[in-house]
Length: 65
Image (cartoon, rainbow, N blue to C red; front, side):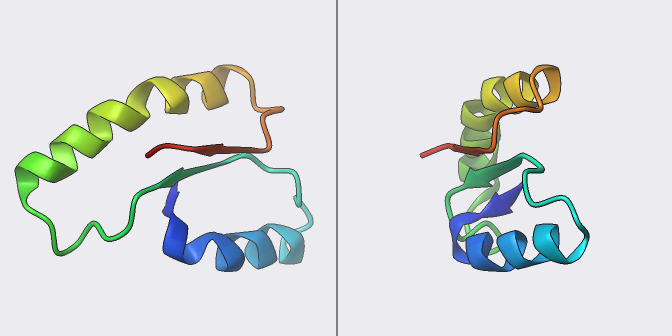
């Protein structure tokens, strides 16, 4: 799981580790400067997509608003 600001970094890391197709969940940036309630809301929104990725790792990329 990453924020969209780090999508390019995640791509290069996956390639460097030899797993370019490893799935990644992309969430809205930033996280560190938002209130806890907003982080909870984002986590709730991302949870279903995270479960889908864990159950079907063939998904290349999943973005959550």
